[in-house]
Image 1 (cartoon, one colour):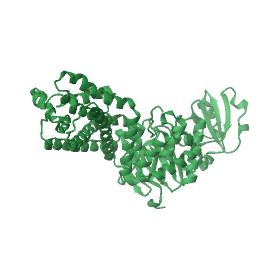
Image 2: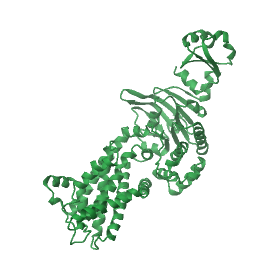
Image 3: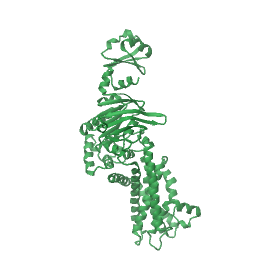
Image 4: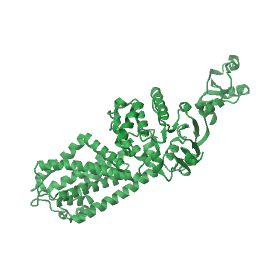
Length: 259
Length: 302
């Protein structure tokens, strides 16, 4: 019953992504800058490959999921709340849409990285696939969790600085978690995104010899990612239903704005 | 008619926001295929009523059924059977006209073939065929409203809710929107429930109800309501309202004070009833005209 509505939401996300060339371009340039400029200071640049791939997933998924904050005051949300769909479904569909947007960007980056010679032929494809999917979904769920509670993220800069950058920097993206000072190590261990990047490290993108060393077991990574996503999505879905049912959402949507 | 056979019914439907009673015990019984207008000034409770009937907000008390389903317990069944056009468009400005209809169609689980066919029909009906591939952001206000109505009926709902469909539009566009609604009714035979505060626009409704402070104060056929009021309204523009109202009351009956005008209801052409001598310098202007729904509302709520 909900296959076609899901297609509607995913298709719209894809259309938006392909039309916003600047968004796609920055999704490619940002990680490459990190890899080539910041990475130039490391002995082995390839250490950063899982980190920048994770960065693309994080930024792509979070920005798409956080756009729900704006959708809450827009025509799209009016179409969604009046459709014959449960309101928690909207949170799920938007999360899957954000996951899709992140995966498209990560796959484009992977192609670029492969062309630049940063991807080894010995990469574990299934671990890479699971890592991409799990990380994208967890980041999208986190974004939806923030979006479900948020009314005050005025713009993308606020989102970047208050949500996305902390999640990125306070993780194992740049350094192995074990080498971090105690406080940072604790925060990184609590950050679900750390486990996504860890899974990508397991995939051995740059080949066994120079690969970044993972900090956790694959099983733990998966349990944390799946558990976090399920919990975040449940809370976001409940919150979303309640926001719609207890009416602040409806009143925002009904308020007459300038055409 | 019993409840399942009605398109819309409501019993003591009530919505309270803290201390404010937005809708205060509204009863409705609207048969399928009817064109119903809920009229009243801004803040009368029209939008709250539409939101309760379309399952978007929960009634504080009372009950309502739309297309045979209860609005508080069978929300999805109600939403499958209705189309809603909000005061602000439910459109994605970044997508094209056709993409918006496709998005709305898929959300209602229509097949691709059905979406194609109905989009073409609706765009033709509303004169938007040539704008199929134009982004919504580039449409004029009138076109956007027309597209929004097309979006609201793409799944062929049994009941269409229109919340102030002509608000913010100029006169030619308002006329166009009424033509579109007329065509939709004759082609699809759907029940239309509309709200408007341009009361005179509701004259073509089968039935209207006047809402004032959350209560229905008068309802019936709009033409009958206007006829009951009288054949003419005499407006006397004056600075001395009380004095003139008292002077004219024995012959013209009770006066209604509207700004610096006195209104009198008459049942025959009464222009000769008021002579220059009688009014002296008290009146700045005297007009007589046919009554409309605005007058009905003013007299009911005086």
